[in-house]
Length: 196
Image 1 (tube, rainbow, N blue to C red):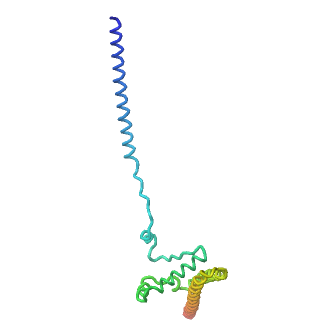
Image 2: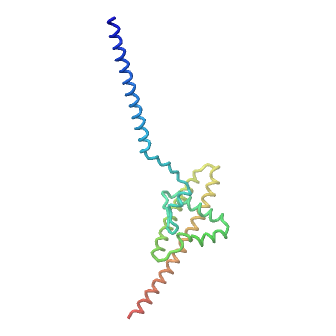
Image 3: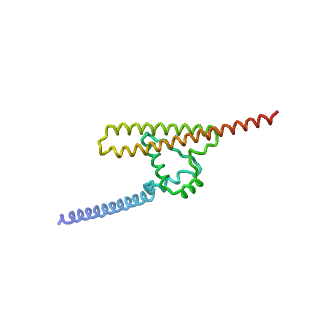
C-alpha cells in the first residue's frame, strides 16, 4: 500500500508538468503569432515592377526641349535617316504641314550663325556616316551572290537618294548661315553708326 501514495504523487507531478508545458507552448505560439503579425504590419508593401512603354516615355521629355540622339554606328544613322525619309514620303502633304506648325524640324531653323555652324557640322557627320554605309554596301554587292544583288542594288539606290537629300539640306543650312551672318553684320554696322 505504500506504493500507491508514491505512485499517486508521481502521477500528480507528471500531470502538473504536462499542464505547465502545454501552457508554455501556448504562450510561445501566441508570441510568435504576434511577432509575425507585427512584422507584416511593419513591412512596407513592395513596389510593383515598372514596365516602360512608348506612352511612358512621353512624360520624360518636355515639349520645348531639343532632343537629338547621336547614333552609335554609321549603319544605325543611315537606317534612321532612311526610315525618316520613307515616313515623310508616306505621309500626305496636308498632315506634314500641320506637323510643321506644331513642331518645326530640329535642324532647319538656325537662329544664329553659331547655331547654323553646329547644324552644318551635324549634317556633315551624317553625310560622312551615310557615305561610309553606302561604300560598305557597294563592297558587299561585289561579293554578294546573284540572288542578293538585286536587293543590295535597291538599298544602295535608296541610300544614295537619302545622301543627296542630306547634302541638299546641308547646302540650305549654309545659305541660311550666310543670311544670318549678313543680318548680324548689318546690325553691327547700324549699332556702330548710331554710337558717335
